[in-house]
Image (cartoon, rainbow, N blue to C red):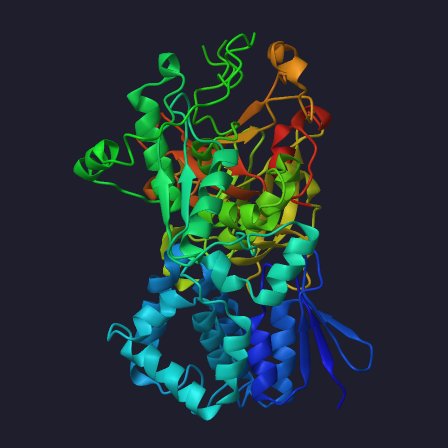
Length: 589
């Protein structure tokens, strides 16, 4: 057997695949040779390739007889393979551990009576969590999960060395846990990296400083500086000092001080000095000898390069979701984990490249997709009623998962009625006699298509055909029941504020000339009744429409829930280049 080559991007170490290869004695060489945010692949000795980590993992499982004893076991193994990446979501880590621990209360292994690749995938997820898992493992909090962990490491002793080689254990951050040394070198070569040393630095004696001026809100350039300084302080077991710069007191106020401290807390950057200690340090012998002077041009013409253009009504404020402030991009649906990974991929050797927004949102999608709940929305304009002749005379409810592959997302109630709503574009695509799939219900046959004088579809009639195969139907349609509990939605899409990719210094004084005239679109829609429970900042996926963050939750029927569309890293045209029916903005090909 020749050597298998596993090629992956440097920001993601495929621990599960490496572990599966180790257990099955497959000679594997893992190399962080791919660009950031690209799909890993396995190069077989025969020259053939397999793409995607789960595909690779299943291949090793079949090679090592770790896929269960029958088709049911294999299906259960697949479920755990899909679930294992949830362990990489920092905010959900303990919840995921609790779920697995509870599941193992009456079981020795996740599937069947012997180890499978499901157990290996979970073990790799725990190892990838680094210090976060080590702390929990030493406690008695998840005893059943610890039992599985220890049992597998004892059975497959080579795994200990494999994990030690590929997991960095400098601290508990997700970025450090996911980057091995080879991966860090690859990032440094291509993108720059935090994996660098400070010349002549001594352990325990490094002190870094983050000095924001409280004249505005933090933007992601500030975030990079803060996180980089925190990185070096942690690496050398030193300290980080956050000290507000007071060189421009006329523009400074407590609002900005409080917002900066709050944003730093969100980013996980903390450095609290008691006021008595600070007072004493100012008055001690060394403190009386030194002062810091900034070299400034007091005759500079432009004194307001960073003021938001509120004061003309172009934006809502410093937390406007179109702004690259920390609060703005978090309000747009960016996760802190994605911001940290993006900053890490940019590295310390160059300025933060804001021209790579697509990469930032691609990273964000990979983080939110495995865990964000799924819901349904129908654009109001032109919606069509589909009457099912053999549909239920009395509406009934089924409780189904909000995410089919992540149980922790919870449940939702789906109502089934004799008449259901379809979007205009879906209704227009249906032909008489065609069998379609109603998502989360089953198949139905469209018998009659009713059109108005202009040829627009205004009604459909048909019958259920629940025994039909969803694999053979061409159209998979989202739908909503025709009943009074649906909620009103405002689906909001945003564009860049500035029309020029890079502003020169001379452009700043005439910033109004470079403002995009239209940067916000809103479409009225109906949503399933479960969306009444959404909280501000909660991220969801609307089936066949994309990812959204709740900006204004449900208050009353007359006030729509505001959902802001989250970019997913793919280029898409702006609405003015699309047909008049703006619902096309949200439709996925």
